[in-house]
Figure 1 (cartoon, rainbow, N blue to C red):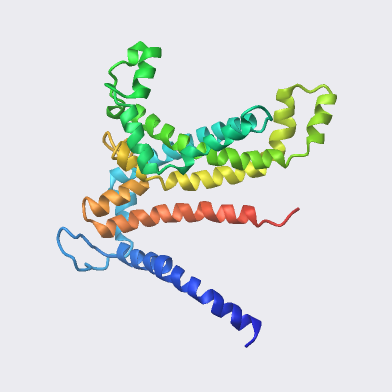
Figure 2 (cartoon, rainbow, N blue to C red; figure 1 turned 180 degrees about the horizontal axis):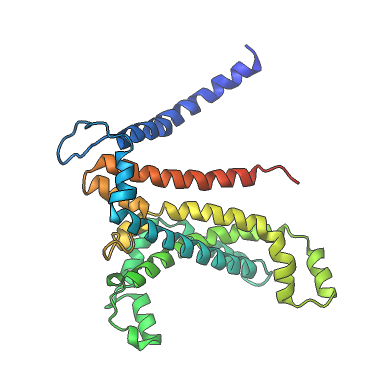
Length: 291
């Protein structure tokens, strides 16, 4: 038996698991998206409608475009604020000092927590009667006293973004710390000798050399933001109205609340297509040939 056949036999169990858990569900759900399937009416796969469910989403359903707008707002603000917070944390944690190792250990704890648990905790802490966050904000800004954060579309979105930022910022901070540590200190020292201020050193020397790591972080966080589900369920349930309903939660609501699995599968495949394009750009960036 040659080495090629041996390698195929060793990889075969893993390929079988991937086929059963990933490929088959993808193909099955795509086939469902081409049919009518409403479990409130029948458990049998309905008539073949082709792209009918997709056309309904893009042409006939106003909720779909509302959800697309909400998803875009959430992803843009969530990614931008998380990466900025992670970069600030990375710059602080990279400095040597007393207690830095303890601080680096403690700061990873939010990432170790379950998103569902974070969502439940955040909902309690934003409660206007006894929530720690709500009382602290009210003490600083008295006009925010007795504000119901989850009754306001803007405040509910802000609370949702803050929970996701708290969860993911430590992970990306450690990623950016690795990027900062790989920058040759000679380039920064040379800029300082030439009279550049610390701000000029950061923007003209450090940031350009960190650009590739930042790009990877932005792409990865975009994928994670598009898939946010647990915290939406436990914090806002997509409300008020559709103000915090993203594509992932919308597909879940259509399938498991309205039982319209044909349309839900089509919406889920729209999300899958977006994730695929972002993942493809990540793969092309990661495996690009050096100039």
